[in-house]
Image (cartoon, rainbow, N blue to C red; front, top):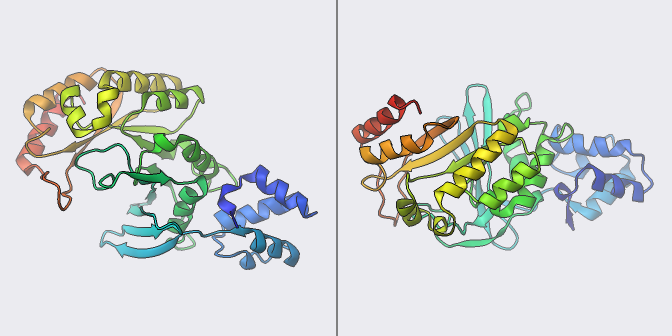
Amino acid sequence: MKHILEFDSQALSDFVASHDEKSFRVGQVRKWLFADRAQSFGEMSNLPKSLRGHLTESFQIWTSKVVNHSKSEDGTEKLLLQWPDGGQVECVLLRDGDRRSICVSSQVGCAMGCVFCASGLDGVDRNLTSGEILEQMLRLQHLLPSDERLSHIVMMGMGEPLANLNNVLATLQQASAADGLGISSRRITISTVGIPEAIDKLTELNSRYNLAVSLHAPNDQLRSQLVPVNKKIGIAKILAAADSYFESCGRRLTFEYVLLAGVNDTQEQARELASLLRKRSVLLNVIPYNPVEGLPYRTPSAKSISKFRKILTDAGI
């Protein structure tokens, strides 16, 4: 059976036409999926019984199984999903004031090899399809009461989104469509370790999504130790591609920097980082490390974090 979430409006229109149904049925099906949060085709009560039958025979809405659902006191909810081939990914719903943000995965595992990250410990298994990425979004949407809607999307879960660019873009096109989740591209962020060719592709396509680059070091020597793929790329190429993207779309860039005690959190490294970013219109997200069992990295002290931040803010970052 095919995944209904792989079908955009045009593909669904072709399916509906092949069963001699009126074209307006496409809008009804998509409204049930994205706005009315239908769990099954049988719930789509304004569709003819025959069409509901054809949809049930041909498509699945859900291809994953929820194997764990955890909740935090601050309202954050996390789902661990398992696909039929055994692969597992996590996705997260975050509540912050009126915001209802979601963080979703793009791959089963990750090939980037960041030494401090749990997602890539076993390497990458496969890319997720656009339907599987979109399914995460709908599962998280179903955690909300009917009077709340998703407001922001961050492609920052398991995997490297730009290594699965075609499927990620197909997903986001549906997520931002008026007959999809209707989330503005201004509220969608793609997080990446920095793949210049893929960033250039975003520029060529005139994408309007926010871009967040995981930097983690102010120089190539250290970054190549922490993010091994940097050996073949280099910070200069990443920054050049990010600058071009900013010039093309005007979206402010975000750089992510995970602070590792005694590794990349010195005052000299803060000054080097400030020098690297000073002339750019950027937001720097400094993140104290969240320890992973079995890895040797630690969270810096509060004093170390404070000194690191002060050097950056004093430099105008």
